[in-house]
Length: 493
Image (cartoon, rainbow, N blue to C red; front, side):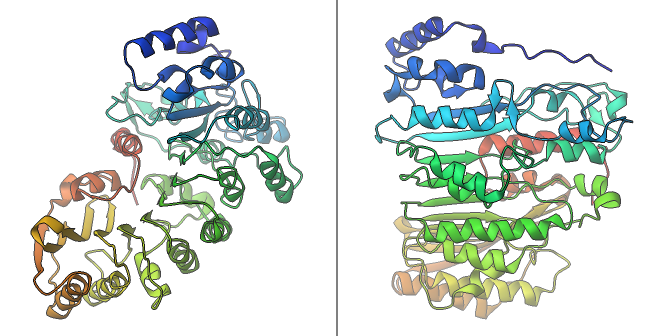
């Protein structure tokens, strides 16, 4: 068992504030458009953030706020998996309340205090991550914790650690259930607040931050933010235009409770008195995880979307310009919720549907696509609609796309199996085009076949389908595919 290492400064943390400031000034003189050092904000840098950024605010359009939790050793990597004389101590090792530099609440208070003084000029992305550097040193060796930069190379490593089931860079033995419970634990579940109401009241007391226009909560955060609390976080950003939210699916009956929390979140977004234009929700999953959790937690093999959540997302999206909702809701529930209201501003829509499977009755698939056309009739600015599904061996998208320059639109079926589009379905989509434009516009019908052998995960499906709408952050997609490669030897559902 490796010894526990004390938390060490990493990268630029080892530089004194005045040196970091000099580096930033040098970057400015070189013509850099963004100051990368203060943009990556760990707890150790937060104390100096106010002074470092004072002269360079105009250069910063992205902040990666990294809440680094304490390191831990093998006695705490899977609480309850190893014998422990103190059950309370085992449970304490799971809790998510403190970072290496103090309580999570104190760090948010300091961050919001600083950002509240910034002028609301231009765009500012706040990307929040919460993890322990030790998460990738035990059972989950494929985990990486990275900023939301495009085109970066994700480091790979070859791990040999039989105690945690790893041989020559691949996981051969399933991860223990207690290890999952630790890494996927809820943030601030055990405190410091005595109740949910107290936590919400704390968020409500934080300073307003008009400078922030976009919030990212990416899938590399295995630890879960409570959906019912997020509205109180988002409300602190009165200029919020974009939300990118990538939660992980639940394992068992907890899903019902979490879905109720999602109802609270999307009901709030529906009533949001802010200029939200873009909502991207991607509920991530891994097909190996249920096989590791089913015996203990009776986990379903695949997510069963709650129709009530789908209906609430439909209502919340009526004022948006772009909506992408994957796996958390089903397209059928979106399309059948509202049969009279319009989406006056929506230009791009991306949804998943569980009926898009080769073993599903084609009549059901066609019925869903008819419903999609009916909804598109009430989206006067729609440029693109994609309904897709993906997992190991399966990739499918039905795509409607407008090409203005050619006075032409297309409907495309791109999948690992074929579907005959009926004459009535084609007529419905022609009606969408002619209602939006005129009879001189044409509609093309395209069929494209994919090889199921090349689809190892939903990440591969996203790439193979060439989805035009943004469904997930690019770095998150890279991480999903890298994780899948590391788990090739583990059984899938």
